[in-house]
Image (cartoon, rainbow, N blue to C red; front, side, top):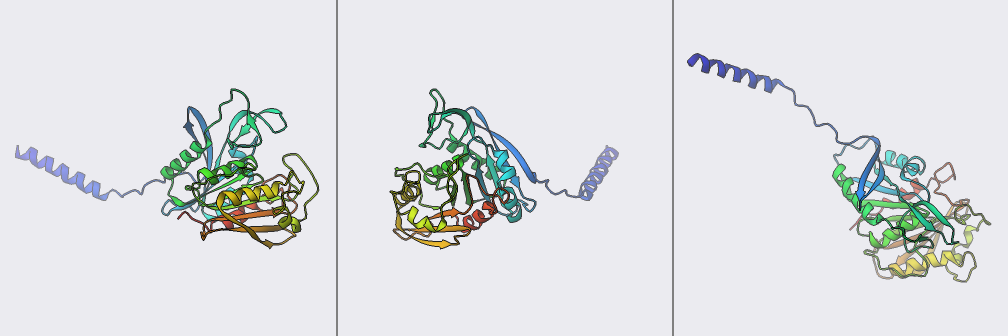
Amino acid sequence: MKNLQGCLLAMLLLWTVACKDEPVKPDEPTFTVGKNRFTTQINGDEREYFVHVPAGYTGNSATPVVFMLHGTSGNGEEFYNNSGWKEVGESNNILTVFPSSWRHCIKDEDGVVKNTTKWNSQPAEWTYCANETPRDDIKFFQTIISEMKAKYNVDSKRIYLVGFSNGGQMAAKCTIVMSDQYAAIVESASSLFFDSTYTPVRKMPILFQVGNEDYGPGNTGPAIPLSLLDTLISSPDIPLRNGKYYRIAHTHIVSFGLDPNFSISGDTTSVVYADYKPLTPNPLNRFRFAMIKGLAHAYPNGNNHPLEAAVLNWAWLKQYSLP
């Protein structure tokens, strides 16, 4: 018996020594650098989104996140490739997210029926076809935010949103219903539905940008001199698409409690800005209207236009964080 006990004790000692000599392996990363495609279930539908993880991301520190929304007929992968945001994410070590909208039957403002990808940015100038079920894109974005926080070390106070065209409409909708979750938002080439007053969850920083040659998808018209921006946003009777620039500015003024007086800055050879401040002091309640020279209906990425909007948008967005 003593011999048996001795053998067992010797084996235990050998095993203990062997375990002590075994090097401790570091935890393997739980993320993939570069392009990632994810899917999630929203009310029974499989929805997709793409995430770019920059090479500098380690997961050791809280990291900002930027959502980029495509326009009508687009998808998340298209804007992953072409918006310029994955490159900005790479160089600035931020996580960038590119969701895809759902394909719907819709009727545009001219009554033309189309089957195309579209964000649920209602109210808008277009409507859904009869018997079409609008998808809950707000729930989709909220789910993405939750999943991003589970997958990555996200800075919850520095989550941002940019949208182009129909994505700009959706971004504008988020300034109202998700303003407590996004630190700042950029609406590009489209905005809030005209002649309505909204009640945002939080008054927040918003940038609206548009080209001086933007007459909507596929349309053309004379270039608007950037020197006229102050007149355009002050005059409801200018016939340019029924005074749309005034109406965009006015909708933000009345919905976010802004002083209708504004200051003009920038360069008439590139970009001119009109900046609005709140009626009551609030450093996080700001509205900036930007008009870009030589830009038609596009999100400028350095190839379709000399300006790289993602670079300029990030320089503006990063000033802000949730209170």
